[in-house]
Length: 64
Image (tube, rainbow, N blue to C red; front, side, top):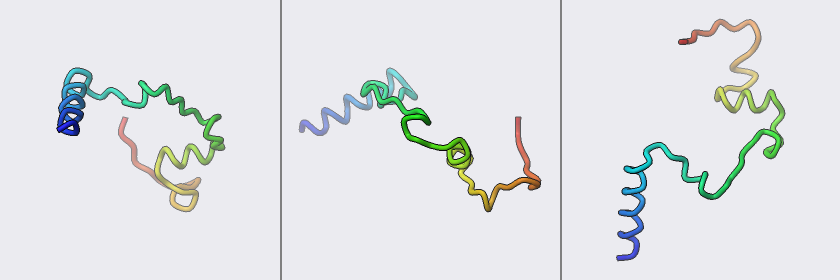
C-alpha cells in the first residue's frame, strides 16, 4: 500500500511540475570538468556518433 502512495505522489509531482529534473533535488552537478571528458569525447557523446561515423569532409543535413 505504501508503494501505491509513492506512485501517486510522483504522478502528482509530475503534473504540478512537468519536465522537472528529479536530480535537481539531489544537488547533482554534472559538468565536463567533473566527469573528466575531453572536449572531443564530449562532442561525440552529445551527437551520438564516433570519429569513424562523423569525420571531416562528410556531407550532413541539419535543421535550424
